[in-house]
Length: 536
Image (cartoon, rainbow, N blue to C red; front, side):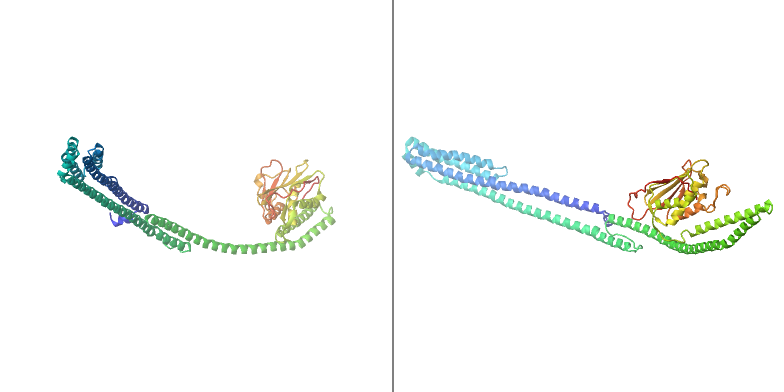
């Protein structure tokens, strides 16, 4: 595997490879440790469960042979069978101990088995040539004959027997020493395995820490520093990472996001510059428009005001001609004079309405808290002189709003006056005023049962000097609803014609809710109603 291929490994793959390698090494050490532990257990078993019991049995076997010899000598001295008992017991103990030693032996214990066989052979020779003949002589010829036989016999066979037992003991000691040394070696091997395992774990941990430091910690710190530079405003700073492929991919994605943000910011800067330029142009135009409107309003006011004097003279002299020469001229001359007087009067009304329209928002006394029920009461009072007995006007649930009370009074005078003016023949006019809250504004409705307005004229009715009927059918200049719209918009509201009603006219307009008013509607004003006709 090349170095380049290794560098392309992901962090996860490297960690997995490291863990697998460490796992394989630890598993191998574990297997070796298990084998070593088994060997150690076997060697300890040889020392504790074989060599030591065999050596003890060898010592006991030597004691059993000494007891046999002692029993024979005692029997020879006394001739009493009871003194022969140590011999018989020693023979039985001999067989038991030899069988015990033989049971501890394994096939690979050839030297000890050969020594045990030699002990048995020497014991058989001593029994056959010394012990049994002496016993037979004592039993047949008496104790004295037995003693003579013992004195005449040689001790070479018994010495050879004891020498064979000593040789067997030496062989058992060799086994014990060999097993003990092997056990100590196994213990040293186990310690070495533990040290190796600890070293592998420490090395693996160090390698993992180094790997994480080189491929995660330092690259993440560098990446964070680059991101902070970009966040500080250096959007041209390229973001990259020298860490793991995952971090390199993350850095590439973040850099792609940086490039996109930088491109969008460039567009935003360009758009902002354009917006600033447009705003400057709009401000210039707005200032120019404000100045122009102010000049136009001033011109309209001055022109209409200056027109009043000559118009009054024209109207006065036309009326004077009508009074002095009425009936003295022909009918056509009277008609012409009547046309002139009517035109002068209509011109005067138009100029007065134009003055009122131009004053809205220009001459202001400031906003105050205005209870609309008081406004409706004032409207009734202003229009009472022209009221009829059959009109019905009612209002309820009217709030307190912020505005100019004179303008709001003019608003309702125009709306209610129109409702009563455009009544249906032979039908008593009914006008109802109501209000309901919708979020941060009051929606106020003025509805009547008059002749109504066609849907096609929904926008036209709010245009200045727009009339839907001939002058001889209904009086007025056609500026009333235009004044209403300007007053509503001056107070921050909207006005529209409700096209869903089947009978009469329904006009909605909005006014802002009084600042600080809770979400619940303000306490409703008790409903008031009158049956006086109110006309504008």
